[in-house]
Structures are given as C-alpha cells and as structure tokens.
Image (cartoon, rainbow, N blue to C red):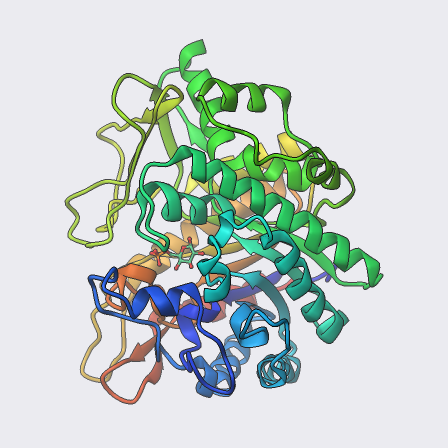
Length: 465
Ligand code: BG6
C-alpha cells in the first residue's frame, strides 16, 4: 500500500468518457437505456464531458491541484465489446494512455472494474441476474489484471453493489427498471458477491503487488429511539445495505441470522449454491472503498409494501426514504437538513460509519472512495463558480474523517466526487458535483471552481498526515 495519505478525486466511465461508440467500444446497458423510450429525460452520456478526448487536460488539472490519486472506472464494453470474448486492443490502449498521464503527475490510479455499466450483451441475458455473469466478470477481470498488472496499484471489483441493486430492482430508476422486487434485489447482490470472489481468485493467481478491494455506498444506520425494537430495525438495515455484501467480501461468509431473516421474508434462495458460497472464504478483499454521502435513519416497520423512494427531479419536494416490509422503514425528525434531491446532509455519518466498519470488520484499510455535494451551481460571466456550500460540505466530512483517523481507524485516502462536472445518471447534467466546472454550452471548457482551489490548499496543508 502507498504510505502517503491519498488525496484525490473520482469519476466513472459512463459518466465522463463520452465516445460511447468510438474505437470499437460496444454498447453498455446505459447506452441502450439512454437511447430507449424508457429514458424519459432523453439525456444521455453519449458525449458528457468527453474525458475520452480531454483526459490529458483533466489529469493535468488534478496534478496542478496537488491530487496524488485518481479513482476512475474501466468500461467493460470498451475492453470486451461483444460476447465472443475478443479483446478490443484500442480499449486497453485508451486506459494505458490515461495511466501514462497519471504517472507523469505522480498520481496513483485506483481503478474500478464495473461502475453500473454492464455490456449490453450481458444485459440481454439478464444482467446481474444472469447465471453466467460471474464467469463473464471473472474473464473480463483477468484480461484487465493481465494487461495492467502492477501499473494499477489499487483495483476495486464493483462500485456500490447494494445501491446499484436497489436502483435496478427496487426503485427501478436504473436499467432494467424493475420495481419493488426484494427477490431480485438480494439475488443481484448474491451474484455480485460471487463476481467479486471469482475476480479476486483470478487476481491472486497473478501474485501482484497491487491490492484489490470493493467500493461500498451505504453509510451508518442510525435510530432516534434507543430500545430493542429500534436496534433490531437498524440491524435489519445493516443486513439490507451492508452486511449482505461486505460480510462475504470481508469476513468470507454470511451470518446465519441473515440467511434466516431472508427466509422469513419469503424469498426463494435457490440461487445460492454451496460451491459458490465456499469461494467467499479464500477470496476476500484487501481494502474497503467506502463512499460517504448520507446516513440512514430507521425505525421498526409499521405498514405498507416494500418501496424505495429517491428524488431525481431536484425540486426539493421529496425526501429519499425506504420501507422494507417486515424489516424497517425510514424515520425523520425536524433537525434533519436535506439537499434539493431529498438527501440528508449529515457530516458525522462518515465518522460513525468508519467506527462501525472497524467494529465489524477489524481495522481493514479503508479509502473514502467518494464524497461530494450535488448542487445547482451558478457561474459568473467568466464561468467561475463560488461553491461555498460544496466547500462547507466537504470540509465538515473531511474533519469527521480525520477525527476517526485520529482515533485509530485505518483510513488511508479520500476522493472528492467528482473530479469535474459529469453526467449524474438520470439526474442529468444540472446536478453538479465537480471541483472543475464543465461549460457544456461552450466547447466543454474546463474552469476550476472555488472548491478546486480550496482543495489544493487543504492537500498542501494536510500532505503529511
Ligand atoms: C454514487 C455513484 O452513488 O453517487 C456515482 O457511485 C454517482 O456514480 C454519485 O454519480 C452521486 O449520485 P448522483 O445520482 O447524484 O449522481
């Protein structure tokens, strides 16, 4: 592991690359979804901020900011465009060039293999529910590991398995747009756990110096009433968004009570196979990527069907919330503060989450692989954005992260989401996260925001922590 604390920023392939069909790239499920009638917004990532052609400029800006790490993802369908398993050399060459630029500025790459964008041929067979997906994923992972080897010191298998599964099979706002199916949700996460284990098995065969991890989204589950029923609701919450994935990935097994709880939900668990579960034990991750956005506040389940609500309109009218029938539901109080997309802003969650991860998973190395503030940025006539709200958000989260570090949590790096403005899935382009503004109306011009300069100073100040 790198010894220096890593300060950087993050992007994901579909959200920033553009060039969706260039140089032999195949289509992903996001290309297909965005081009279909199901995409009522009609907004796509076809061009986005066009990192594919602007990567030199973007990486130079990271270097000038003092960032010593960059998290990005590889597009699976750029490397393996069709189901014939033939490798697209131009796809590999693109990422070679990205790595060359990173090297030039002393930027440590942290690379995720899949960030939501499955190839369309996998989607056509059932996506994450396809029974052959783990073998396909392991093959893709092997191609990547064998090509890049230790040029990439940090690999992450899957971005945000449980959040991805929730969007695909509960909220239904991501392809394949299935709603309220707990059966598909848990099946999807199981398949992701098997994908993770099989990719790690390939990775270990190569005896690389590089490390391999997983990027997880959910933060802590909190309760406003401290009694047994509420604590049980919080435990169900942890099963629901964290332990279902991190237990197999870090502890190498499921807790018995988790399987009992799934059975009580009435799920058909015939998708679980002993020989696959056996793979968990010897194929665990070296580090955890933990994303930090918002906490979950829950109370015991009262009534109603399973339902996961998000707010993609940004109109401030709906709060994110969940009912998981029989397990728990969201709770609120008047002191909570929300952004326009109905997501709570609660900086202490990063501290609580880090402490909780240490309690359950030992002092595993942790990188905060995403933390960021989505907002309607307002630019002046020169395109400059004074994003004081973003600076306040990031500095309060970072302070809580440093508190956990001071208390001995093995946290080794922090990545702002996002490096520059990019496609925010079905929130489109108005919801912005970047340290650098992208002027979509004027040739995708990059203009660093106030937060970019603030981050530069912070990195200088904290380079020796
Ligand atoms: C994370 C994802 O969940 O949150 C990113 O890994 C995403 O891909 C980020 O962009 C912010 O979410 P959103 O929906 O506001 O773009």
